[in-house]
Length: 169
Image (cartoon, rainbow, N blue to C red):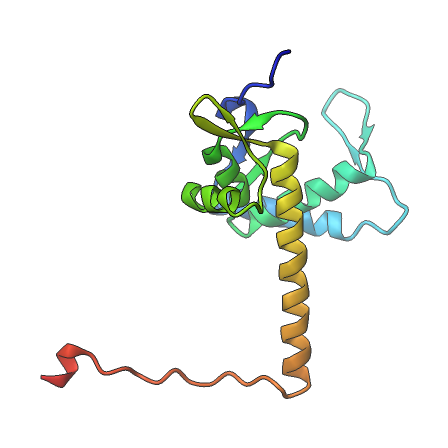
């Protein structure tokens, strides 16, 4: 029985690191244009000398998200999700956390993993599922915080300055 092998970084991620200002502005303009597309309207891509190609709705949404993130200067990663195994380092890059944090998630049972020799491997689909759960929780917490602020139940208090050894001299 063959087991999936860990993907090399070059196979896993198509990364757009924090882009220069001109690229960020272009991404922002493109994201704005995609944001103006009315529901039910299709988006096409045209290359000079070729017929336009209509984008599937899911690709259009993914492209809009990638452009918004790039416009804000965030790193954008694209990965295909299947049965591929990821190293803990690759999983950490996809989740935007440290490798030791991924190991803690595995040890606590929050993220499934298996051993490949002495190394831990995580299925790409499991990493994506975990990321969705975390994003959903963050969205709920953001909504709850906004509601409590609107209701006046939550106030931001100033942080009191603590005395330090140097201040006591």
